[in-house]
Length: 234
Image (tube, rainbow, N blue to C red; front, side, top):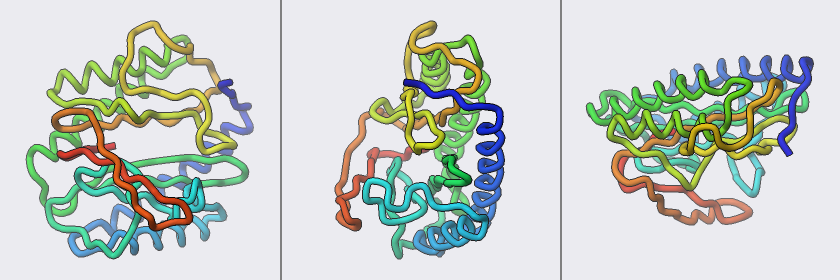
């Protein structure tokens, strides 16, 4: 069942989202060659706790950290470590924030120093398609139409969308219905209604859209980092 939020609940989530965005801006300042991904995770957790919230991801399904950090061909679920960033990397920071009973979730992709033209273009296309998807996500439109908008633009630019992962609803639970695919057909799927809240998560790759899974036994449960053989972005 797709849950809708009241005006008061939306105000809380909006406030939480603004705080989360500010935390992300602070993390962005620390992304540079030589920075270690575990240091970014520690900073993220410190900023979240100072803001009066909690880490949504830490402990979720056994995930050991506050921040997901995925580099280059890694798509999502990267676990922070002593790995140092290098000039030319692209890094994806994915952070969930639990505030006054509600979750918000945000991901950004950043260049580490000077990156290749191909990586720059991949980043631009993904940012543009997120804006197009947000514009499409209006009451009366369908979720299939949102996915179709994402897929058509990405493929028109010579890239592909990951099909085994998707966006999702969010609220009192970190992952709620519906699942929001990054591909689809117009006028299909659930109709969007006022009060729905969801995370749009375009995941764009250079080359094929198929992914690989790599188990990482670094938590109470084995974790899975999802990979593409070439650069990817969320």
